[in-house]
Length: 127
Image (cartoon, rainbow, N blue to C red; front, side):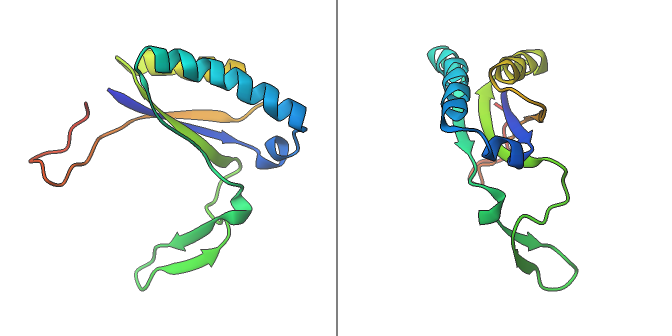
């Protein structure tokens, strides 16, 4: 089954890293990624641009409202994600633990099963 591992942290903290700190964290995360890739379990990985580059579409009963900025109500910011093939939730949690060890500070990893949606097929698959 595919699992999305969503990365949350305080953007002010990660954005304040020196280039040396950034390179060290990215190097540790790449070690985890290379292991998953070698096992054929790594799907898409994305690091999002800062929330200052965000645009929000707020749904409402009338026309959706488009707002400049990251106005979803959260304490921590959504910084990026991994999609990983895992046998079960315990295996996905192991990957999240490895990522947490590689990435200092607080923050959180939200783990969710991914359902693939393919409109030309009779039903969605969870792989």
